[in-house]
Length: 457
Image (cartoon, rainbow, N blue to C red; front, side):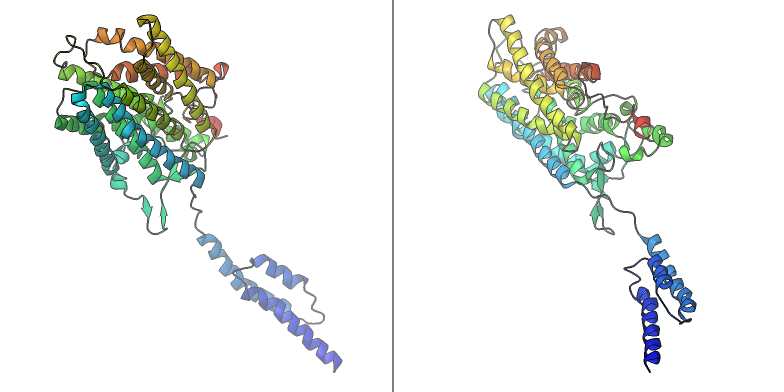
């Protein structure tokens, strides 16, 4: 009886060891099931080895499709980077409304202040709307070397209904993403402030409707193509191997392909707006009484407040252009601080030498000049380079609003070209100089064009 009971218990244990992996097939891989059959003691029983293959076959058939059907992991945006980019977007909005509006408003005569405030605010608002309608798509989707396509008109495709997720935008680091809708909003503020900058060049002598019409045309046919040519690329993850590096670079914007460095918009924003403003000033003509009567600023207090808001907001403009809360953002943050301070000192010294004393207007103008000049260099140069750029910007932009302005003969009302054009050109040129590690630069160029091969190996 004991022998019969022992045989029965052994058979029951063997049947459990064979059947149990099939019950938990979704939780346990197929391989351990085979090991269990082989290593389980079975005594005199001979049925289990015949049953094992039958049990393994369905399990393998179930496991293989499960592995094949597993979808690729969807990249998850970094929450810290996303939060930082939303804050940076708010800072750039503050630069324009109220920063730039107050800066310009204090510089014009009192009778024109409300007109300038309205032009800045409505221009910014209109361009933001146009950016989301078609501007973002034409600037930051694949097309050709000069303009993008229409894949993201009205941000079409930004939300994936099937997956229940938002589309992601690449940063400058492999495997690091932010939501594309945040990137689009950040870039919308750049487009808005660029157009608003132009207002200062022909302030006090142009109708409101004409301003809006000009901004629509200039945004469409100048800002968008330049933004695409300078900033559009396929992202770092596209450079998966040395073999595809050349192909990926050929899909980028024309100026990007040339290897130009523009960290935050020295060319796209400042030079672009300054040239438009200068041409506009020539085309519209001079203000009535220009050169014959004093056209002094009516409130340097407002100008000072506006310049201060611009300085604070510019940290989002420059450091936010890193698209991540990383070392490059920190470098851009520090450079924005030190270059601006250096430019204020340089402008005040230069003004004291030329006119016998420095002024509040000079200090505010020096701050903006330093901010403009460091914009293309912010994350591409070291601290020493930022100091030199700031000092040179203060002195050279002072010449830009005095000596150069007389040579050009245009009535650039609020010195858009003298500050943004001269400062932008200076900063763009010196970025290439001070990017060198021999001059304190970070040496690691973040444009991926010149270092694509190295990054793929």
